[in-house]
Length: 238
Image 1 (cartoon, rainbow, N blue to C red):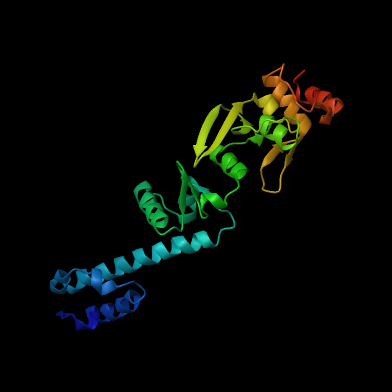
Image 2: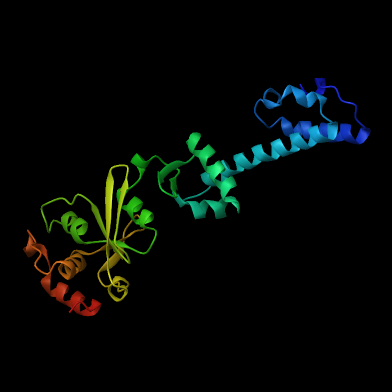
C-alpha cells in the first residue's frame, strides 16, 4: 500500500499524503501503475503526482457520467467539447478515443459520435444529423414511403442548402441543394416523431418536379394534385 512507501517528510507533507491517499483509493490499481522509482522521489513531487493522477481519473469518470445524463444520443465533436468543458483539441480527442475504446461512445462518422451502436440508430435521424444543417427528407424517399413510386431509392434523399453524398456504415445519404427561398418555405413540411423534418407527399412531388419536370410517378392517382398546385404557388416553384 502507499503507507509502505518510505519517505523523509515534514508533518505538513505527511498530512498531504494522508489526504491524497484517500483520493487515490478511488482509482483503479493505483499502486501498480506508479513506477518504482517514485519511491525515491521527493515527497512533495510524489504528492503532486498522486493529486494529478486522481484528478485525471475523476475527470474521465465525469465524462462518462455526463454522457449518461444526456437525453440525446448523437453528438458532433463541438457538442462534446462544450459538454465536457474542454478547450484543448488534443485533450478532447484523447478523451474521445478513450471513451470509444470503452464503448461509452461510438464513432459514427467524421466528427460525429453516438452513445448507441449504429445498428440501434434510425437511419433518417443519422442522415439529418450528419448533414449538420437544416434539411428535410423529400423526393424519392418520401415518394416511395408514401407509395407514389414503386422503386425503392438506393439512398436517403434530403434537401438542404448544399449538394453532398455521405456513406455511414452502408447507409447512403444524398442531399440536393435547394435555393434558400424554397428551402425555408415550410409549406407541406412537418416534424416527425423522431424530431426530423419531412415533406408531405404533395410537397415531395413539388420538390421532385422542381428538379425533374418530366419525372414519372408510378401511382399518380394517390397524389392530391390540387394540393400540389397550391404548394407550388405558395413556395414559388411556379
